[in-house]
Length: 332
Image (cartoon, rainbow, N blue to C red; front, side, top):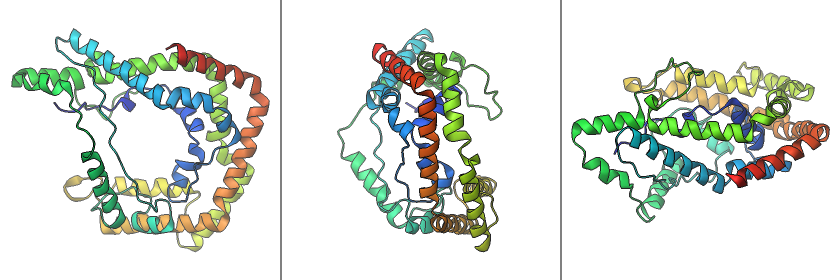
């Protein structure tokens, strides 16, 4: 049976979920573009640490399992209404082993920002092979829907695929358009469950979460110390022959070049040697200049300052929100 065409992350999760996820995951120190090519300790500021109960309630293993079960049950209900049998099934996560030196200068010298594709070589190829071996060694997991699908006629299979996956997504789809069963049971069920979770966990605290996101993430780079740091970094990059205003600017500029330069047969993930060389050159200069200006130390210090102040100014409301989320998650 063909895999669902639309990942659950495309199911229309509300903006506040994404905003809060950025704050809770420590994205400001580990997953943002400007940290892609730098050593990262997954730094967590005082607010992020204080919100640990919320992080666990929303993104912990039990929470994700519960959400996936609800999505699968929703798919089964939707498929039944379309006239098809579907058994809820959660596939085991694929093992993906990382190279041991990811984030180091040697790693950057091989892959740059890790944006473009191409043939896997060296440690990356070894990690890919080891991942395949690890996945093959696990007990087999059989999707019970494969047997159901195999018994269908070719015409019925096409109808089944359409009911489950929906039509191909359009690049010009209006993001404000609600997902429906016509978009496929997989996408629709995921949307419904995420919408329910958004309502349960975020609706009553939208103002707090928006202020939290704006203060501790969105506006962080406008902090005077970060402005000075970016200026110092930009001077270093210019001396190395690269003109960018910030690490984010460098990352986004390289990404734009890669996306605008498809490889053989139009494959956007295989870039030319020239483009790959540009990516590595910029990423290396970015790495070296961050080291030169002590980027991580300064940014972590700013995160500490901003998060501690927000926590002090809003502690009573944050405590109320933590209690609300923990209780709501236990009730679901």
